[in-house]
Amino acid sequence: MISSTFFFLFSQLGVGMLFTLLFISPRVIGNSFFKFASLTAAILMGVVLGFDFLFPSPVRNGQLPVAALAVSVLLTVIYNRVVDIDKFRAAFWLLIAATAAGLAAITSDSLAFTRLLTLGGWENWILAVNHLAATFVLGSVMLTMVFGHWYLVIPRLSIEHLELLTKVHMATIGIRIVTIVASLVLLQVERSVPLAAILTELMVRQALFFWPRLIFGVVLPVVLAGMIWSTVRIRHTQAATGLLYLAVVAMLFGEFFSKFLLFALNIPM
Image (cartoon, rainbow, N blue to C red; front, side, top):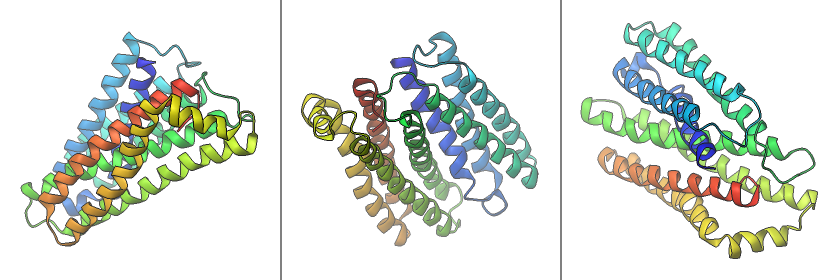
């Protein structure tokens, strides 16, 4: 369980950072932020690969997810070097390729996961959708938090970039909430297990995991997103960055408890 949780969580964090980088341009901001962010993403994914080599997942069929993530790491390292020499067009396509390989790794890892409740053949696909949404929300909050510090490095940097990343983050929270609801709807439609029984299991027997997952992964991020947007609108970048720190911690805890629920109930949440 620990090896799969580690692979899920930190590969999603690294790939999500690459995905969010696509929304801003080094032509406007400069390449220093992109070098730092891509290096951070490469390190996160590299650590995941090393951990998986030492402690391979016992609940995965095949090594395609590992191979795809390794390709993503390689492309990210090349991207880091290309953006350093201001070859922005080539760097952009490398970033797209690295992101695509990372998303393929996360999708294939979800499709290869063997411990899921049968939901009419859709169980692995609903897991993939949940994990892709988790990738977007984790990566967006982490990258936006790091970008908030860049206003200390470049004080004259336009607030529009932070506004854009904040909007992206808020959109990913909405997508993540939709995927959680979709899992519950599919349970109700399939009726292989009564939804009432699942909810009782979640809210009572698995309360130690479910309520923190709901609070840290849904309620607190929504509240913090509103506060972050308010501070960005008044151009208070330091306050926004502080709130983004809290959002990163909340999201990590929320997705961490989500993985525990996955192993406890065999249902993506």
